[in-house]
Length: 88
Image (cartoon, rainbow, N blue to C red; front, side, top):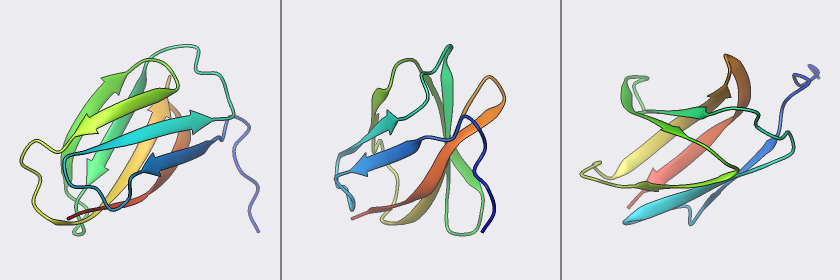
């Protein structure tokens, strides 16, 4: 297995699947600056980009259609975590 980056953390996304909003909680590295969450649809198109600070953040659905989405969180150009979530 490949080694995880030094600053890799664990990202919990709940509830998953979600209907109105989803909370992302980062455990592990302390973020020294703002983080960027990018959300992609099943075809790999970026559908949302949000900047946040802190280790916990809530993303509102705001018109996202039902389906599977992939997320990637970065801070200061470094990968923090990624995964998939479902909107019902």
